[in-house]
Length: 265
Image (cartoon, rainbow, N blue to C red; front, side, top):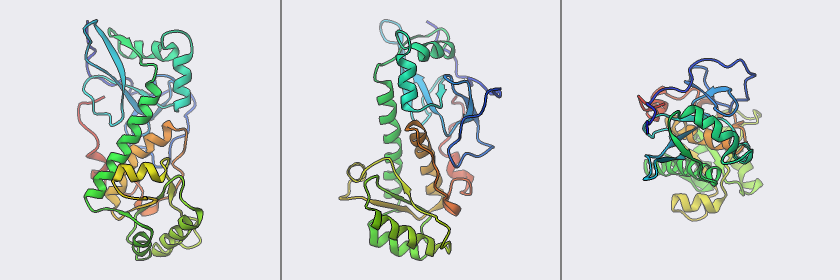
């Protein structure tokens, strides 16, 4: 069985209407075509699917590649989990998704796990929490309301986020401290509500009762932006927070480049 060579799926433009992009997409970002919709979008907003090495029976399993690092050719999807589930359910044996993957991975005998959407979401969540952990180890991630508030008022916070189940009052106070420190009072700037609750954040970071998070480094915010954008896109949410100087658009390009690998689709 021939395993397809590593090559871009599509580098052209689509004649279809453009789907909404998550806040933060830059026009210069490499684009990929979603195999399910045919629409082009930023590589950083789409989820890559890769295939496993051939099994003894010659088939290859389709797997999520949340960090877009797996070797070989890949296929990209820019749909939500619900849309992916529908694409698998339509028809038999993988439906619309199977047909799209067959075109993308020509020559490969594919099997699509029935729990692919669940695996994809788990992989995207893990990519995000792993990056949070790395930034914490590097001393750039702050936790604890008092500590965050102090740094925010001094203008040292570049990125602010709250757990999904954070109290409104606590979040509002930190948002205000952030605006004061950035001299943006009255702007409506506020921290991002993450798609993880305090229990999930606490487990991921090995800390008790993690409710609020802040980053003190612009480049760290850019590094975190990539897995977060993909996760929110897959969950059907938008990256709507205006992050100002702490956003990925204005962060140093090197912070984004270190998450890209030459020679990968």
